[in-house]
Length: 172
Image (cartoon, rainbow, N blue to C red; front, top):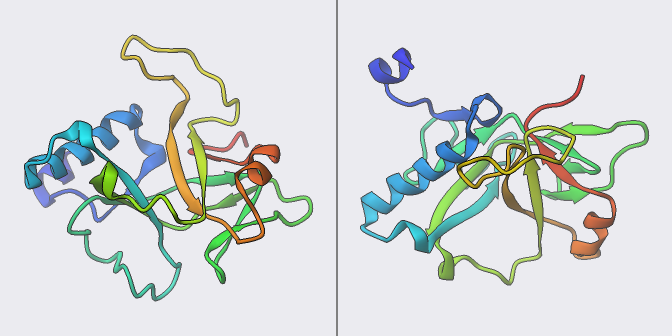
């Protein structure tokens, strides 16, 4: 925290490192709401998975104008295809895959393109995928849903049947 105060916030955030991840996400939306004078309850995140090398949309050496870059997530039940930038079937005997950096982009809910071919991927803190409801009304394990691109031949049901989710930490 001292480094954040003296040098400013980091350019990218290790999402797995937050104890109460929802407060960080809410803070990101709140910063955008204050900047744009838009009510926070009308905002949500759009998601952009950043190509590991030379992404024309993002320069992760500089903080984004709005939102934040996060890393440290793992896919469970599928893998990320860096060539096609979509979810893909896992390779045999590999259970989890690292996810590239993701840009969380605050937007008004009605301005998020809902026609894209995306999987609504749940993000959990642990692989147990169960938690209890805390006094804040949040699950102790579920973090949020992230919309991830999928190949045209797949649909939501395809990935749901495989139990695909993202995790902030692995069991081993």
